[in-house]
Length: 173
Image (tube, rainbow, N blue to C red; front, side, top):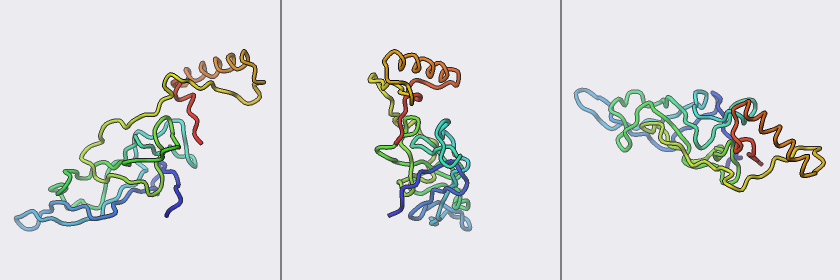
């Protein structure tokens, strides 16, 4: 079993198929089924983390999409089972316990969908709901008044940077 290393928007991080991507391929005057091995690099990924980084690169989350799947270019008739062609790749599921901006973190060996016909919708987001956890800053002294004042300052800074309260209250372990 692989060590669960977090995926990130970086050209050497890849998603690849574990079985053949069978596409309709022109051969003479007919279209035949041909198996290909497809892959995509995460360097051109979209909908990645804006605030969480791994080794200086944006975190690849459950909601992220990798673009430009390669390896099946001759299969211009698109996929036999799923009608994708040089399209998107996405993770099917990620970590159950580690989140980045409210979306599950994707790790090495998490299941993925390669060559999806489109980007798909927005994945489930884990918000803080109505039970907001206060932001506790180091060295706050722990007094309720002091914590409230510092929380107000942090929220004001977050507003300047365009962050929501949910983003400010994220706790990733």
